[in-house]
Length: 340
Image (tube, rainbow, N blue to C red; front, side):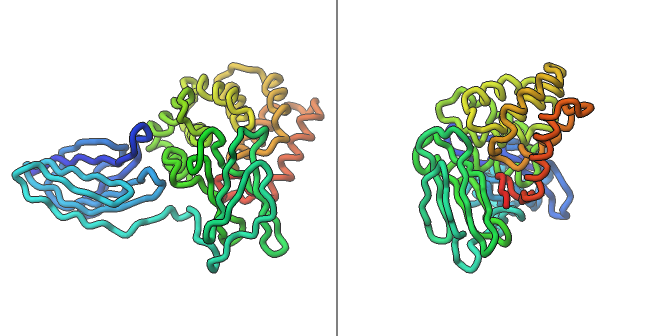
């Protein structure tokens, strides 16, 4: 006895992405781990689904598949919904309490927002226990926010989208043990989803969603932060030969994000498209600019080490030393570069 289970994770309009999910049977055995939408014939019975929504939140649902019927399970920001073909009795669907990513943004500590000192390159507003940041013009460099926590001061790169209006341009900072936590505003569906994929380390399962974010380079509705996150999420999963042209175009359109130049140089070195000397010159042009992503700083250090050779170029050695000193002050758990 079997039925068909259709799984769909809903986005909105053009922001709909093939999001990752996993399906397990009543004994906890993995049935499939893939991306939505998908239709699959499975034995009748109880199933447990864990999926990522477009708001960057992992949700879980338990549903019953009916024999000789098609059960459509939709998970969106409002929760799980079940529909069964006419003639069949709708099976129960029991939502499991919402599960946030383990390393996701934390609530304000004791209801107190982070102590903001300055936010060069971005406007700011306090909303409850959070700070909201936006940029109304394309900046010349990555905007930052400076927070004070007792005697410590933190500088955080701000993942704003200057090409969009409010609230699709914003990011949010909340207090957390240690450094403040930055995240993309939930209204930026694509960027917040890609951020959640990166945080969760599911780049391989979400490869279609990440690739789709890169393909939106030419779209007026594109979010450069989503594309940068996608590029770094994909890097290391496969050679980015097909994505190379999109990355080059991104770096051309958004020179204020040096992470893109670092990624393009690393990809071209991997593909054998440039020499170490050319790579070194291009890295030196951006290496002292503020990075947006923590992963970009790590990649810059690794790539500089690749091209430094025998140490004949003192400029490379000095640049590498500066980055390594900066690395000591980095909160390596943060997606967006946060330094003491």
